[in-house]
Length: 388
Image (cartoon, rainbow, N blue to C red; front, side):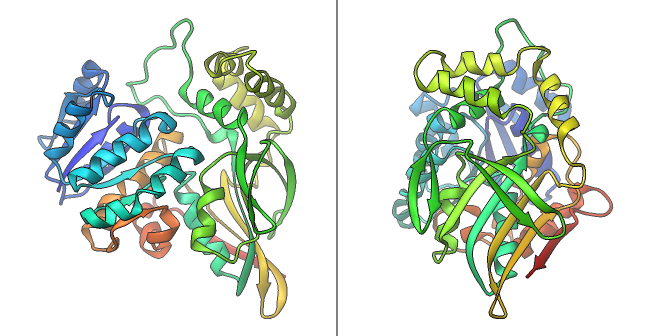
């Protein structure tokens, strides 16, 4: 299997490529990036004859089509996805190549799902948002929801303190005026209307709305809403859903700051990039993460899924999470699931053509055993809890 890893020399992309190289059915990986020198250095460090680097500007449609034409599968790690998701998926479909990405913006998710019929016509299997959140979290939602007989509410949530990468030796030094990509994504999500499912209807509303869920064994957890794909895709898997949203855990200490900065972006007083710089000020992103971690409950996992409905005729709730995650921070917990698209495809576990969210086509019982070897000797430790 020949793979084009677009954005393969970036933080998430490097984790994807390293994981993909553990599969012996992979015959070639082309690491394609806008920083050709970084791609070359990264490839040299791998010491594997199956991988090579190319310079690729994804806005050059001719170059993009030429790169895609030479492979079997496209793995797209090039964000922001509200800019690059639709055109890269479109190019892959037109070339008849299977595709996966780690899209974490809800707007392009909606647009990319509309390419489903064209993908079917071309015999292409495309899974969008196969990372951590969305990705692992969606499949945890499936495990929680299917632990009940009926489900009407699904909430996916994660700790903002976990949204940081460990230095793998290729992380460039922070330059003056540098804009943290994850902070840009966060401010984009917080400064625009978000789509949620409320009382059975899709609703565009304001982010950072507070709610509380009563999670099995963990008790009351505070959640602040965020614009993410889970809120618009899970209803496709569970059409009976009445309420669905994604949110952040453990941000009590900074939620007012986030609202203030996001509000300034929303009214045009700040650009998204300037807001991201402010978010990373006063000691940088690491200081913010440490501040968050200090205020968080240690017994709450980094990401979780919550479902409410009925079981055995009685009101009931269920929750799902993994106890262990790969070492390496946000890059590996996102990039490794992305690479698992390859064995799922190779093993015939993704038999349908079309464009899908993870929960529509990936069986969690196929996925989590593939994730286990990357999470240490005890595996991921998939846990499902119920209460009534």
